[in-house]
Image 1 (cartoon, rainbow, N blue to C red):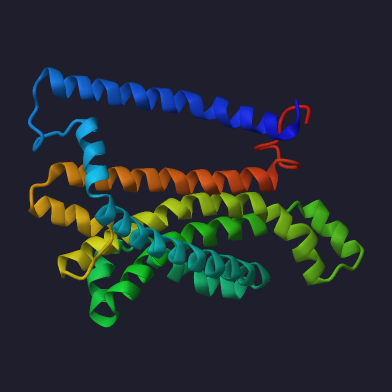
Image 2: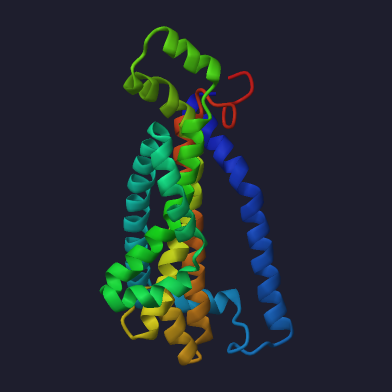
Length: 267
């Protein structure tokens, strides 16, 4: 079997069980709502949510684009800053000791406590962006730093024996060794960037400034438009899965020829 067809078969085989389970859950949900005649304001059926998605598609998808725009910007910013800081920390133990405590402080401080403070000093757009960045930043920094430090000491001695420069050790040894951890950090950070954007939008939306999906959920709650709330949540869930799937695909293509985590047996 040719390589593209074999990859497509692997993707379909991996996607079929969760999609089947998801279809079964939706079917049971629809049947339970119809059987017990649950009012739509308590629990809308999947068919009602789908109908709401179609009816409010202009409003919901414009809000989805606003949330995704913030998420992508925060993710790219976190990737660049996290990778560069991890590289700097790998070159200097003193720098690592200085940066690490502040990175941990940013990680453990609840974002819901930071968001209202940032809204005082920044515009709503920039406050949401900073919140999403702060949530996504730490996994990339910690994973990349761990990967850069997890180099085989025998290989380091070999590079030292041949008098390799620090630049050559970074390009030919540390960077390839850190790539799996870096990609794992990206997969974690992608979802966290979306969560950070949503949490910050909730804070901004409370002040009437937001336009993303989180703001639409709050607005629908005030109007008791429960189907719209579920429709917005469905879009957020699908977006999170899509982000994780795209980053997993990136990791697969980057590692499939040499790393044991994704390489086929005998390949």
